[in-house]
Picture (spheres, rainbow, N blue to C red):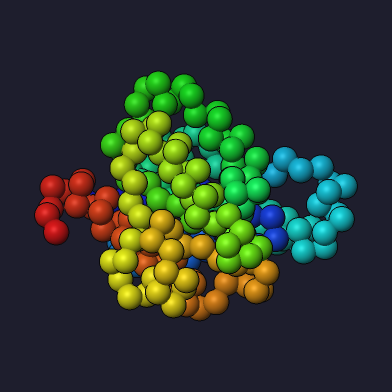
Length: 202
């Protein structure tokens, strides 16, 4: 039985997009069927055009499918990613989450594993609080939080964040160490999900 993983993210200039792709790659390597989805952009063109990197990323990812509630219904587990906005998740991702009330009442997300990842400009710019903010949502959904912890040495070269993979965007694009940690996070989410689906123990 293949686990079905939805990797849902928002990215303005591309860092979280790169992390999301790595999480998806790790999940696929572990045998999952993956849907990689971006949430809809809400910012006005005037704001996007003021930052050439933002406009470039919007154009480069036009073909990435936009997340819908069906993706949450379909999936056995979730990986959510966001840039940090004052220590919290981006409004674009929050808006998508705020549309889930109906399926939340139906218990769609309950008992499904979920994990989070983030990017802030600075190493201490809110990455941990952003991931923990995502986990607040998972608590309300009744999901099972699957953090990487320190369960694999690959976590340490990527900054040693036990809550989820995090990238300081001010240093440029995510390093291979960081992408490796994100791939492991996708693998771990798939492994835990598969165990739950099949009743297999560690």
